[in-house]
Length: 438
Image (cartoon, rainbow, N blue to C red; front, side):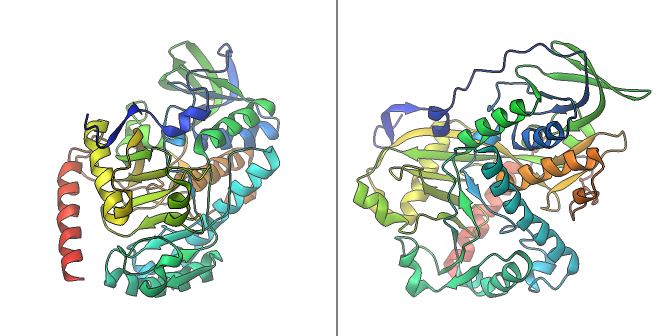
């Protein structure tokens, strides 16, 4: 590996895993039956389990790998509520006049409230901070479009959003790369690994049974529920929840063909000079931007490193490919980081839907699900997981704008996104052209 980019102590694994015991799973036997079985062990599953267990419902969570293996501990730790929802949709472009769009943005904003409430109620120590987000405009045209979006976010999500013109940009980020941007104050950041471990502890405390390294197999409808075959035996359940998101597979082929598993890649730098690190993002915000091949980044919780993520490739590739690509993107925004090396690089699957909206509901066969948050799942999937739990409990407060919406797919798509390399090439070309004419 290139010694000018990779630190001698480089690790091809998430930086977040340094703080959590990946590979250590609750040592429990698989029960013979449960009221609810949840397939998947991430934020969706654990929030659902907490909601059910708090109400006295017996719930078992099945994780095929080690708990914490998936995207719940591989993301950038940015927390938003409705910031990205509706992007590119007619209602968003018209300033949010479409009532359906406004309803969805309002419910997405509620996801932010839910996450903060869970962290406070369960006492989860995960370096959570409400420090806001800066969204950089990749082109002048993108900045011009922010005015309507700021108005919409403030009206529908109480986002405390405002425009930041280019001449004030360095108040937010030490770069001239963007054409201005917008700030959303109602946004935060956390340590995703510690948040996930906190959710696990809360679920167990409330009585949920967490079973790791146990892959769900055939799901069979019985007279009064389900029989779930697993790699460790069979469990009977009244209800089954599919909470697999970007790792949805052949267990549920109908759901698999409705989400696109898209790889997102992240690097962590070596510790920086404290003065340099502080200067990069003076207000400690999370950062995202508007090109089709987007990036998102922040400082580590201790303020010493840059954690820089984006679509280095749209598919799974090794760090020898993703890390140099992300390093180059980072230097384009911060040339002052030339010579800074990478200590960690990793990848996780996000789940995109064909309409770019989150979805929850019940399949024709009777399986509950929540998935498809298009890269903004820390708050949204936490919220939708809890909403699925409330729906099973029969609560009226589970009604939201994402429940039961048409969940589209495409003809001949079976869940294998063979087209992503072509999409990535096309997006990079379009970004290059947009930037040249801006």
